[in-house]
Image 1 (cartoon, rainbow, N blue to C red):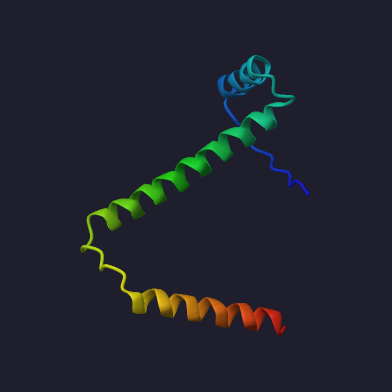
Image 2: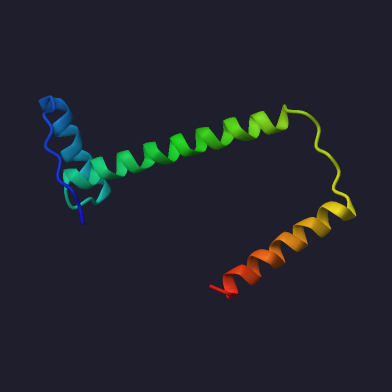
Length: 87
């Protein structure tokens, strides 16, 4: 369910939103605001991802996986699968 939000904007911003809605084919100025918020959320998510990747790439070198690592991963996966089946 959509929530409602009432805001006060300068007249120039309201006019810009109206122009943007008309030019971009939005049904309402509210849809323009919704689109702007969604894009800002995507930018924030992208920024967090890039920061995380930067940390990983500049962190300590990775440890090579051994047969024992892969065996432990398989065992853990099989144990979890069995637990899910027994629920």
